[in-house]
Amino acid sequence: MSFANVGSADRIIRILFGIILLAFVAVSGVGFSSSIGIGGAIVAAILIGTSFISFCPLYATIGLKTLKKD
Image (cartoon, rainbow, N blue to C red; front, side, top):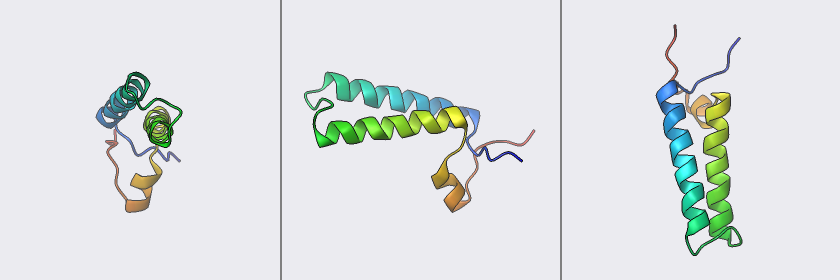
């Protein structure tokens, strides 16, 4: 039984947004030492993590799937 619910395009978008968010926090004046920077890093980690495991708990909660069946 597969619990995957994140499709290929969704995975790519999540990785890109996660990397962009991490880069923004790193180069902006916010940095990782503030609560906004830490929050941004956590959100980026969640985006990247859910893309690697192809599972989004929020999608599962609301019954959404972007993964196409073969």
